[in-house]
Structures are given as C-alpha cells and as structure tokens.
Image (cartoon, rainbow, N blue to C red):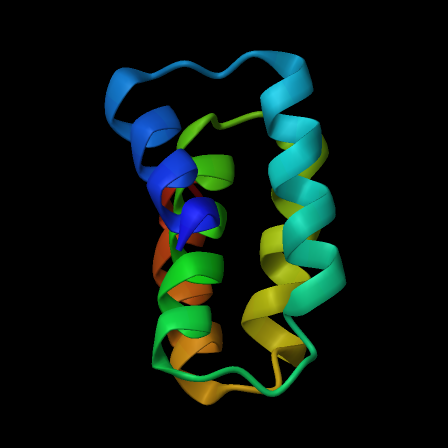
Length: 88
C-alpha cells in the first residue's frame, strides 16, 4: 500500500528525482515476476506508471520487461499501456 501511495504521489506531482526513480525501478524489478494479489498488482502498476511517466529512457527497458514478462497478465497489460509515455 505504501508503494502505491508513493508512486501515485511521484506521478501526480511530477517529482521525478533520480533517487526516487531508482527506488521505483528496484521495487518493480523485485516484484513484477512474483505472484501478486490485487493490491500488489495495483502497487506495481502505479510504480510502473510513475517510472514511465518520467520518460527517462534509462528505465524504458524495465517497463518493456514488465510488459513482456510479468507473471500477472493484468500488470503486463498496464505496462504495455505505459510504454506509450515514451512515444514511438
């Protein structure tokens, strides 16, 4: 729940500090291939949205991995949607 709240705050405030993005990336990397309940999916989806919303190309591969390899299909679907933040 705290991950979700932090990710939402980062996304809606456009507070894309490098250290916050690095933490979001770490959380996503550690969780996207795990079985998740609805709250977990929502939390990691928000983390991915905030990370993609930064449009920092360094993190695009993370979002692509989630889109293609997430254990939960719902999370993968969200990640595919967030890839559009990077443009074509």
